[in-house]
Image (cartoon, rainbow, N blue to C red; front, top):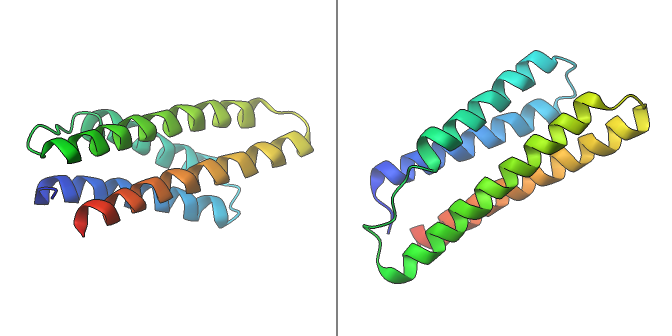
Length: 122
């Protein structure tokens, strides 16, 4: 079972991801707003998520937590690359395909955290 502070950190993380997803789905052309949210996500990942310690968990839960942490980090790194490709794309079709990849990968990161929380909070 996760401690209350860890649960709050993960729920805050999930809320950040979902808020970025809402911005992307809103079809706003305010790239500055999306970019600011993206920077918040990267900061939260480095400051709060990657510094969470799993030592207080029992052995079976430690590996699950570490796997979640590793996969979360991987998704955000991939999203960073996707955003860079999106920004540098010149053709509309390339931008559209990159945008769809960003949405898909973001949804996968959200689902990963949702599933992890369901597994440890039961």
